[in-house]
Each structure stands twice: as structure tokens, then as C-alpha cells.
Image (cartoon, rainbow, N blue to C red; front, side, top):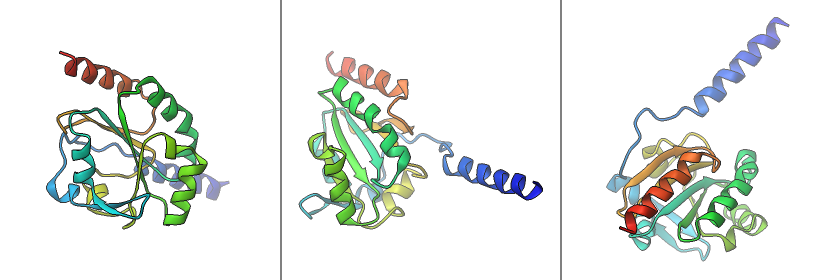
Length: 176
């Protein structure tokens, strides 16, 4: 029994560390982070800077996910609902899948090929961009304002009411 409690305590401690919310919510990306390259579904390498520049002037929701991630899959219906409720918002899906084939199959399996733009961190979980944003858990959501600034730095579920609130505030600001 003593060992069971010890193991349970260790497991609980590890899970708390894994989901640790960053102490500082960054409002912009570094040049180094934006120079990180990802792969698109057509096997082209593209920098995150180029991707975000393509959406300048629009509200963007970035979802970090993977097809092997149970939490990501459980959250998928809520992510779908968020997209459905906000058709003018651009959704970018950044995958942390372990290999390209699994990523491509997951996009189709979960219908993301019809829901937004998909990219894969072919360099793996640890790279300049993910380290800059202190990515330690998926799913994770970020909202980028039309001016390119980070409007929401950290959320681990599409059910977070602050996501919709920020989208509505950004929508109202752009309509002025």
C-alpha cells in the first residue's frame, strides 16, 4: 500500500509539471521562433512566419495536436464547434505526430483536411518555436490577432470560454 501511494504521488506530480501554465503570457513571437519550418500536406517546407503572414489581417486560432494524443481527440468535437461558430476565423493545425504518414492519415481520419490548414513539425516536439512558446502539453490553443500579436497565449481546451470571448472582442475591434 505504501508503494502504491508513493507511485500515485509521483504520477500526480509529473502530470502537474506537464501541464504547467507558463508564468508569462507572451504577446508576440521572436524572429527565431518564426523561422522554424514545418511541412505542409504537399511535402513543402514553410516557415511559421510565412504561414502567419498569409493570414495577416485575420483572426487565427492555432491548435497544437497529434493523432496519438487522447486529450486532443477528446477535445476535437469542441474544436469543431469552435470553428463552426466562427466561420470567419482561420484555423491552423500544427501537428506533433511522430511521423509524416501517421500525421497525413490522422488529418483525413479526423476530418481536418476539410477544416483548416495543416502543418507538421517534422523536426519533432522540441524545436525553436515550441520551446519559445513553452509547449508542454497538447492540445494547446493560441489566438493570433489580425495585427499578428498573440491575443491568447495558453489554453488546453476549445471549451475554454475565454477563447470565444477573445475572438468576439477581436471581431468587434476589426468591425470598427
